[in-house]
Image (tube, rainbow, N blue to C red; front, side, top):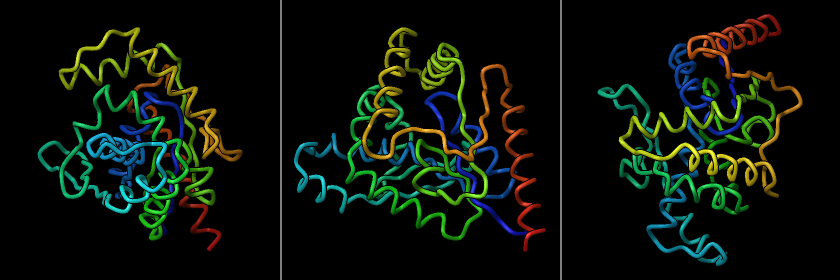
Length: 231
């Protein structure tokens, strides 16, 4: 059966990553968490005291960054490795969340990560989620989805995610972080968060996890059938 590229974009805490992972699993596709890639870069920059106003320092740092994804069978999830080290939990901290939008808005960073992402998707059969997958990384993706949800619902979901990692954060602090990230992601000059013209909107506010996964699986199956008929 022919395989396609599924691009899932949208706001933070809409369920993009968890949904994309499950869709990929059910279709037998590879899952690429681009948000985790930018978080890993943010972590590397912080650990190595990289000055975000120094182009040469960033070039040198980016040349040293190798990002990979490996499946953890015990936790049944893909985990991100930064230069051979598992940083899956470390990149999910509020400290990184408060800094990732600034780092991901830098042109050099986006160019480096987009190049890696496009290389990963050459063979198709992937589900990739982020902010600019359908507009910049894979503008020719066969299926583009744009996920959104009520702002407060998003905050409650993110707070719950953090609590599951034993990180207790006040809801107001979470909401302020989401608002800041929305503004930075939507207004940045380089690859802003926008809905692709041919993307299908999925509002997850009142959807169960199974509903949103099922909806995207259905859309994917229709696209795959269309590819077979066309070819």
